[in-house]
Length: 207
DNA sequence: ACATTAAGTGATT
DNA sequence: AATCACTTAATGT
Image (cartoon, rainbow, N blue to C red; front, side):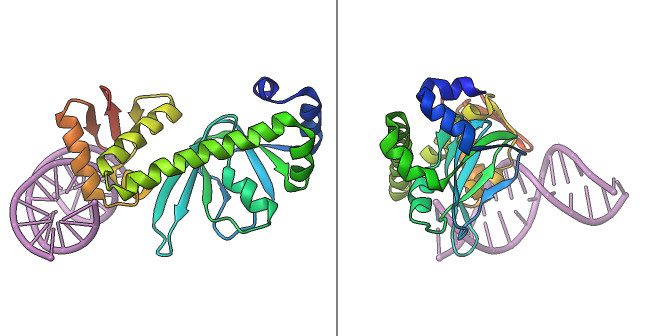
C-alpha cells in the first residue's frame, strides 16, 4: 500500500503522513463530500476510484472527473485552505482506500517538503487541464465526443471494456437526456465500435 | 400473466 | 440537442 506513496514522497514526509493521516476503506457508493459541506480533510486515493461531480440547483448532475490511485482533489486544496464550502460532490465509484490528511498541515508541508508541493501543483494542474477539456467540450456542444471520452474513462477506471451502465445513468453523468444517449450509442453500435445490451455496454473498437 | 423498467424511434421544437 | 409520445424488449413478481 505504501509503495505507491514511496515513489512520490520523500522519507521524512512519509513519516509525517504516517503520523497525521487517517486511512479508511470506503465502500462503493459512499459519499465522501457533498455540496455546501466544509472540507476539513484532503483525500488521497490509494486504490479504487472516486467520482467527482457538480450538481446544479435543480439537482441535475454533471460528472467532472475521476480520482484514480495516487490522485487527489484539486478542489479540496483550494477549498479547505480557505475553509470554503465544497462546490462539488464526491462519491466512491467502487470500493476504495483513501488517505485523509488534516488541513492543518497544508501550509506547513508546502514550504517544508518539495515533493508535497510538487504533488499539489501536479494535481491542480492535472485537474485544471481536465476541467478545461470538459468546459470546451460543453461549449462546442460536441456531446458525441463527450460520450466517447466518458466511455473510455469508464473502461479505464473499471479496467474492463464491459461497462455495466444503463443509458439513463450515462445521461445523468453527462447531464443530458436518456433519449439522446440512446441515439448516440446506437450510432456507435452501427459503426461496430460497441455492442449494446440491457444495462450493459461492451466496447469493441477504438472510439 | 402482468407490472415495471430499459431501450428504440419518429416527429417536433 | 432536447422533449414528447409511443413502441418494443427484458426482467421481476
